[in-house]
Amino acid sequence: MWTAIVKEFQRLCADERREGIIAAAPLKSVRLLPEQNVYLYRKIEQRGWDKDNTTAISLGLAYREEEMRYIPPEWVNSKPERSPWNHYACAYRALNRALNLISRTLAEGFGGIGEGATLEGLVDQVAHVRDYYPLCVSHRSVAEAANLGWRGKHGLIVTPEFGPALRLASVFVPGRIDSPARELRGCGECRACREVCPVLDKGWNEGDLDRYREMCRRRIEALGLEDEVCGICVRRCWEAVRQD
Ligand code: SF4
Ligand code: SF4
Image (cartoon, rainbow, N blue to C red; front, side, top):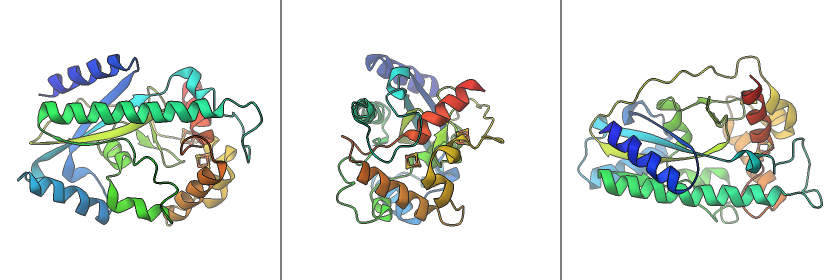
């Protein structure tokens, strides 16, 4: 089954002319917030599956190199004149749409539940980042459990292949499916993302991740690009992982 899923995923990535990575883990190893568990378990129960015998599949679809270079390499408070930053916002949107299609197609093909890349268009409608939690699963938690990548010091998933330069989606299928082990090196002594971003540098607190996420959300909202992005820490981390 895993071989068939990977083959179909690779075909769908090729259709989008992008590279992707995929990994799986038992659902019970995925650490979701209580609100996210309620959201997902309701769907699983509706299908009559056993949540203790369900597999979570993490999908990553990568940005192209030129798309990463649209992001400013250093911190800026607002969009500089003539900056191509909005092209990165467009790439973000294109990746989300592609992942929504890929997750839906895989779910339909393998009898699963597909969870798309993002809840687009909600940034203006939510009063706080916590408002997202009952509406989705954390693709980062699925990716972490599946060992697709490690949780970086910016809170995003970092992969050996693409650093953090990818978008994530998830598919859940009944039964147990194992995927090959992946070697992850972790951040080590690197602090590049914290050094480039004042939100990360001042706002990060392991005991209060909501605070940092909320500061980041407000920064993205204030930036006002054509989609809900900033990405400066992503570019810096992508460069750091490539240099390593
Ligand atoms: S920039 Fe460095 S410290 Fe930050 S997430 Fe990437 S590898 Fe980790
Ligand atoms: S996306 Fe958020 S954490 Fe990353 S550089 Fe921008 S404000 Fe900082």
